[in-house]
Amino acid sequence: MNDQKLATFLAVLAALFYACMSIMAKYATASQSNFTITLFRFLVSLILLLPAMRKEDFKQLKTNRYLCHLIRGLTGVGALFCLFYALKYIPVVNALLLNATFPIFTALIYKFYKKVKTSKAYWFFIGLSFFGVILALHPKIDHLFNHVSIIALSAGLLTAWSLVAQKELTRTESSKTITFYFFFISILCALPLTLLTWQNLSSITLLTLIAVGIFGALYQMTAIIAYKKASARYIAGLMYLNILFGGLLDWVLFGQAPSALTMVGLILVVFASIMLSRCSSTPPTQNISGTKVIA
Image (cartoon, rainbow, N blue to C red; front, side, top):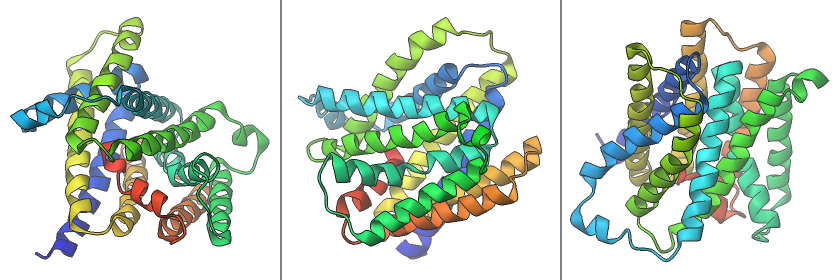
C-alpha cells in the first residue's frame, strides 16, 4: 500500500474514531457532566501517551513558553467543554458541524490579530460557511439564538484560538511536549469541576468514559500518521467525514436523523472549509488545519 492510499485509509479511520468518541460522549452525558467526560478524555489519553514517551522526550518537557502552553490548554479544554455540553442537547451532526467551523474563525484571527492578507475569494467562502451554519441552525430566530447551538459554535471559536497558540508552540516545541502540556493542563482544569459536579459511576458509564478517552487517543494517533503520509489539505478534507459518521451513528443509535436543512448546511460548511484551506493567499491557516490532530 503506497503512502497516499495508507494516508486516505488512516484519515477515514481517524474521522470514524472522532465520531465514535463523540457518540460515546453523548451517551455519557445522560448521567455525567461535560467536565467529567472531558477529564476522562484527557486522563485516558495521557495514560496511553506516557509509555510512548522516551527518556529524551521527558527532557524536552523543560520549556520557557508556559504562557503559550496555558493559552493552548485553556482554549483547547474549553472547546471540548462546549462540544460535550452541546452533545447532550442537540444531534451529534449539528454539534460536530458547528465545531467544524474552526477554519472560519482561524482565518478571522489571522486577518485581524496577525494582520495576514486574505483574498476576496477567501472572504466569499467565509460568508458561505456562515450561511451554511445558519441553515444548519434553521432560519428561525428562536433556533438561531438557541444557547446550546451558540455554545457548540463557541467550540469552533475556542478550537481556532487553540490552534493559533499551537502553531506558535510548534516553532520551538516538539509535538509530544505540546501534547503532554495540553493533556496535563486540561486535566488540571477538568478535575476540580468534575469533583464539584461528581455523580456516581455505574460500570457501564465507567466503560463509556474510558471509551471516550480510547477513541480520542486512536483519533489522534491515526490522524498524526495520516498527516505525515500526505498533504495537510488532502487529509483535512477527509477529516470532515467525522460529521457524516457522527450523523449516521446518531441516527442508528439515538434515532436522531438530520433534517434536510441541516444536511444542506453541512454540505456548504464542509465545501467552504475545504476551499478555505486551499486558498493560496493564507498559508498560516493551511498549516493550522493540519495540526488539529493534537486537539
